[in-house]
Each structure stands twice: as C-alpha cells, then as structure tokens.
Image (cartoon, rainbow, N blue to C red):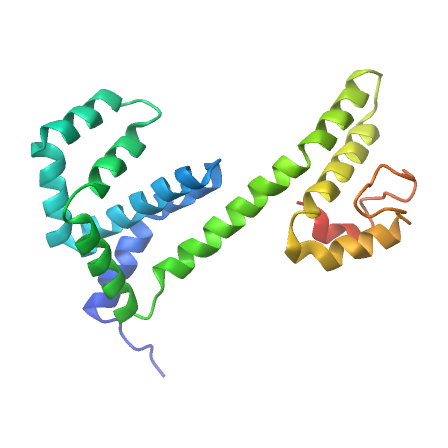
Length: 214
C-alpha cells in the first residue's frame, strides 16, 4: 500500500521547517531565557519567509524602510547582537502578530504544534542550565583538588563522574537512575556524593552508570 501524498500545505510547512533546522539548533548554545526566545522567534521568522510570505514581506519591508529599525540592524551587523537586533525590530512590526498567527494556523492545519516542539527544547535547555548552575560549586571543588596535586587519568574520570552525578540531581527525569546509582555506590547522602565517597565503587563500567553518562 503506497504512502498518502503530502498536501501542498504539508509540503510547504515541511520545507520551511527543514530549511530552518540550523537556526533551531542554536537553542543548544543559549544561556538565558531571553536568548532562547530570540532563537525561537528567528526560527518562526525564517519559517514564515517560506510559507507565510505575505505577512513576512510586510515585516521585511518595514525593516528596510523604517529608519530606526534599519539603523539598529546596521549598527549591530556582524556583531554578537545582530540576530537579537533584527528580531527586536521584527517584533515591533505591526505585522509580527499576524505573521505568528498565520504560521501557527498553518502548523495546526498540517497537524503540527510549533509551540509544543519549541516548548520541549526550551524546557530541556533551561533544565540543563539550572543543573550546570547548581553543580558549579562542586565543580570548582573538584577542579581545585585536581589542580593542587598530581593526578592520573583515572582521577580525572572519577571527578567527572562525581560532577555528572551532581548534574543529575537537578534533572527530574534522571531521578530513578540517580537513586539506583546512589545505592550502587553506597552513598550515605544522595545529595552529597563526596561524603563517604569510595572510588572503588564508582566504576563507570557498571550498568547503573550508563543512564547518567551525560
């Protein structure tokens, strides 16, 4: 039985999504909610340039003809804030909300949910940033301990494992795996991996460690 051919709407949406995957992937480099929202809106704007051209053209013309918007974009061109400046100007356009409306309407028509797709990426990134922040103090302690004495590759591996376990403390989806590992290494306080630490038990070859090998 052959595959049901895609509708013109589905083809347009799929092509727009695929053409902007590189932009979407930038979420993994964001370090704040504000940066994430810049990438989200750049992704939406990029998609709209392909499948919501009428709304996109209004914004594009405004960015070119509006003196304030054009000056802001030109001033930041080739700088680290270039994308943010462009998106800030696009958001101020009267066509921004209609563009988002048209894009989400198309998304719904083809059975997709852009907000759900983006929401998953955003939550995951914020969760990871939170974990990095929570484990930073322990990371400093481990690095200082290694720097203050000669150490082997095994010592580096041990320190990395402790840090990765500390990261998992802030990731709810790893709770069961984390609990299993704390039992495996006979941890007295699951929130304090250095207390009662036994390097002989912290063996990265154990099956219980694999889910935590971030």
